[in-house]
Length: 327
Image (cartoon, rainbow, N blue to C red; front, side, top):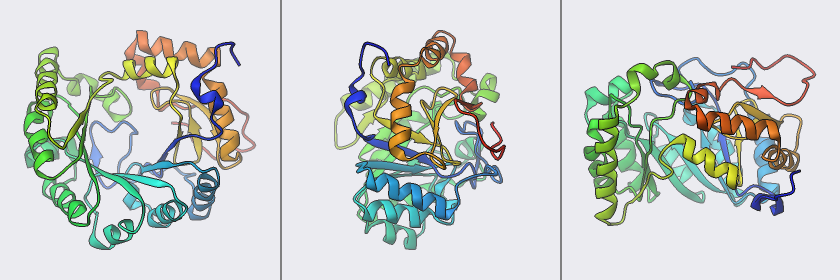
């Protein structure tokens, strides 16, 4: 460990676990940062028993907050079992969904849990734009999901990915999120990760589009009201720079149980199939003192095209088997 400690070095457990349950999804979004799509589940994703064991470890470690995401978490057969295991254990939950299959039965079960928010992606404010970015999806279904979330008494967050396809509808989406009762609107520059990286020449907004977008966000934020606009740090490089200074107290768990040091980097530091959460947390804290990881982070900050490698996972241990296909 380096001489300069980080704040998290004194924490006995993470404050937040972001858990990608699957790479499977019911949509094929052209900008997906995880590279998820129909039929894209990893061959060695955690099964129900393994996922529930990880959930129990999160509870036992007294982690206060967790997010269930994907891919699309609602396509996972044991999604609600995991959510209930966490929630009944006192872990506050965020669920990140495209809203296409969020039905009343699911909402009723979620409403019994300590839900901090359900986040729905609204990429565009017209069906034509939404369908171009979220292939196979229905904007009407996403809007209906937002209304159903609020009707169930649950907190709604909206997220918006500003690609060249969607960015000119940003102001309308902000207004739509307000009208749907969202308490928070999340956005920022499009991330050059996953599927987006492969289509970057067609998806990256122009400098002029980004300037107009920032103006929309600034004006909307200055207008005040009950909906908070969150868009800083704006660039992925800025977020990574902040992580180098003070790493977040967050574990990012991949569908197969591997733990990444950062969503923006390929380094994997632990495996929850074989490691306890406590051991994974130790490995994560040590990773942010590792010269190799620090060098990789600085290289990506200087050359953002390197973010395209974030899903080409690099492990730091020798596996006893070859079960996992590294993307």
